[in-house]
Image (cartoon, rainbow, N blue to C red; front, side):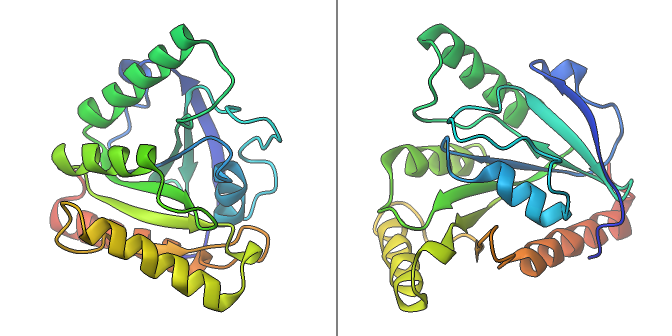
Length: 206
């Protein structure tokens, strides 16, 4: 897939105010400071489409970006250790859940994982929630440039082992990426493109 256009459409904290377009949506979410904004900018080939920050928790709303006028990339708030009040974090949690449980246009979620770290409880719990809610998702391992190739492979295998030791029968689809070196861009876009082709071919989407 070639990204010809990528434009910001709207930010909000209420699912009812999300775009009315009946276009497929791909949601990106992960722990705070996992490199989500940098990944989105790398995928869309726009340096400042998503706002990056050295401070965790920069994204605090549901952000819709229309890509090629036929699908939406949805940037969701990070979970974890963002420096916000417990009350604000509770609101984040609620509208994130509302989005996943109510948004009919959502066809796939991408859960971002820092490949340098061992499997984190909060990531495993979130993926368990997606599985129980029957929400299709794929894993994106970020920051692979911080490790050597052998370590990258070892960390992926360790993560796979951890998941298969739990309730998962198989490893979810996954991609290894580096926003700095544009690693994984083609694979993710091809994955989205294939899903879009199936959707539009079968029913023109909903």
